[in-house]
Image 1: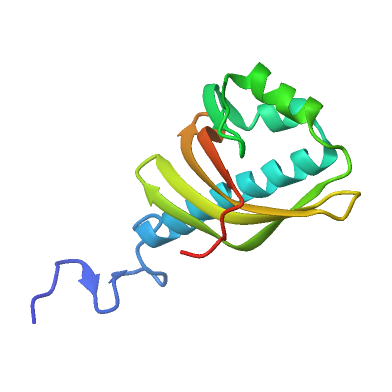
Image 2: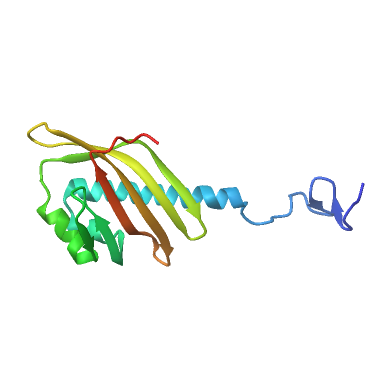
Length: 154
């Protein structure tokens, strides 16, 4: 068995009672990043349901692109905020199933299903796919594509 000088079995330095701190494990950092991205998605749904256009738009990068369920392309925070201002105030969105996050470096691809019922009890559903990027202030959405009417399966 090869031993590193000054290190006893179990990764402890001689004279120390605790293991050597080697920093956060990669899996811990990925889990934390995944949790932050999921929190961004929860904030997205919450701000939509509150009809808070400023909070909703602030979750996007300044030059973000939003493709609506009607396949209309909207670019920029102000125009994205306008979507919330014009939305049906009676409909509430819920996440349908898991929020799938695929992390790659400082960005992630996210996919989740959604359900909505308005005051007229008309149900709508779809799948949202978005690209999320990490900036200094945290994660933000660069592109969101709403496939309304699509089932949330794989």
